Image 1 (cartoon, helix red, strand yellow):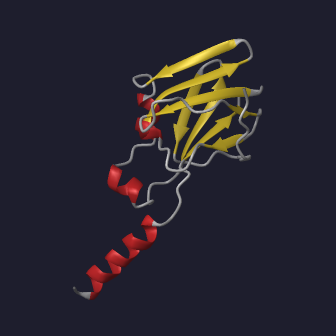
Image 2 (image 1 turned 30 degrees about the vertical axis):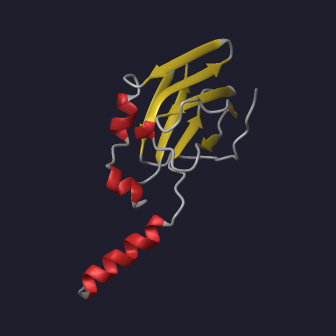
Length: 138
């Protein structure tokens, strides 16, 4: 094996050992929300997460927006549900391929909840982002 191939193989080995918490939900709705999501790797939905106004949370380890098949947000008395099809623009804005995700070279995807069922997403980190640890609620 030549030096270049060895260097690439070594880099891939070390990158594969990195943790990835690649999906961030940023709540800019002006009020606290409860969020649940459904990752295609699991039969069940996530536990409900409380995300305070103007705060953000990372989803679980290795949960990529490309694998998200559903999202539910409780905002006040309103419930907004997003199906796999309705999440297509979110996945497109944070498009990546499986190899890049597995090598941990895909940037984080920031999903911003703007309130009243409106979502946006980008690889660009939002200004004044304040990430908190997850708070699971019932």
